[in-house]
Image (cartoon, rainbow, N blue to C red; front, side, top):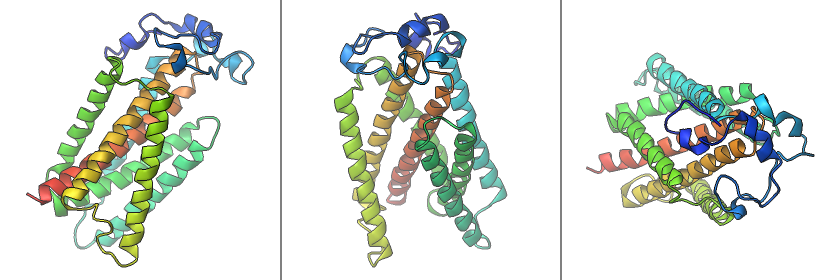
Length: 285
């Protein structure tokens, strides 16, 4: 697969669209692109699957497809975040309205993401809708944090998100991170525990304990946020593996939207956790 992007070009330097069918016909358990066979236990795009006729030639996904869709989705998040920051200034007069819009946008984004998560095929309208509403939530939240808690922290959080993403990409390309079934299972278990702690914290905050479990301040809050960043980094490695597999196996082109959706949700997660850690750190100093 050929790509004009210098960062990703080595992933598929020996592949092109004409090779996609060869990957689609590769037997289960065969080595792919120099990776061990046990990293590729199943081929969802093999002949006989519903998508087999769409995974050959020009219809196979390329790295450029993933980059374009991801850029479109992240661009939508950034655009709506900037617009909400500029058009919904957070001050004493409209703080309640801005907070309500942010919560409403977050709920809509969550619903759209859940609908897409349970759909068998990607729906670009759902994915871009999720990105737009997520951007509104991030814009209002970032404006509030920057205005009332820690001025300048948003730029630091954006740079931190880029730094984490670049680090994971380098580690993945150098094969310092091996994404296999054991890694996937560990990340799933850790994420489940992390989310359960978030739910418990919310319940404690809602029913008496104003500070919840203490994840919003102090050393415990920073540690919890760092764990969240590490989980986000692990999810990003899983996303890179998904992209690599899709290209290697000649997935249908619409799979690029699923890759963009996964990358966007993961980057949003990392940004929020970096923002949490920096806000707590700056407020304690």
